[in-house]
Image (cartoon, rainbow, N blue to C red; front, side, top):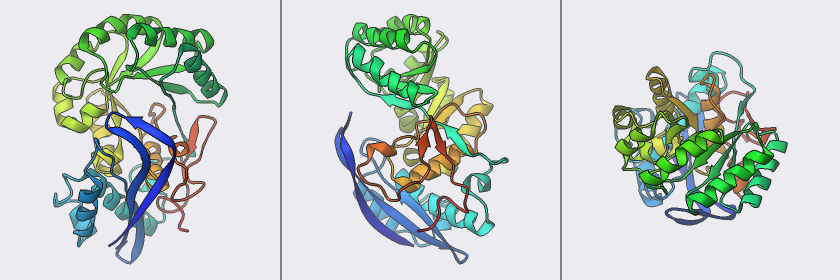
Length: 334
């Protein structure tokens, strides 16, 4: 197995709860499985996965990539496991002569998957203008960041959006920035404004409180809470109507596909998102979404946040959808 470091600049600095991100550092993972080459990507993100150093150490310790996926040696390093699993699945689907999404379980050809736009913090006018651009670009849903301002200001932002864009699906993401009291005050008003999803309103450790917020007209979604506690614990706490699944943070597209299928059996929906990954991992996430029927619009349009990429023209987003690669494997070889 070969491990090749890379570093991708962002188009502009990106603020997160763990600090400012200016570059995405990771590793291309190259494997051979029964004589067929496969390519994967491991791009750890502080606060979500292991560190860049731990990821590299784990990757360089792998002797048999196929065995490493089942023997548990990569269970505590999700980004590393993502890279190895994507490389192995790429090789296996190439050998089978099928696109990755068909190899992992997609039954029918899928040309594209719906994608949501993301709108950051801003004034009511700025937020409404950004959502208007997303509507004109053809996005079927918009996720708006909230929780930085007072609740009254965030509600004014959503009201401004709704007066200009009455039909588009609206989701809000508080990134754990609200208290349970604030969320309880917000939910009736968000329901009146037609908000479909409130993502991670409370801190990741508050599973019981998330459970208490359900059933008020707006779906409660877990993102950070799913990563921190795992699917079984989140399911046992009855804490979510929707799971936001990041393959890089959860250990790979194979792991996430199993989570989504189990969640649906339990009556919980899911969407697939990325962690500002490079083109190899984004393509894998698009294949994952294409393999799962009737997913809501997913957070797969993050390539525009990068100033440069691992590969150009992979799974491009246009008119609110990401194109699904149709060649053998994950992406065409260079």
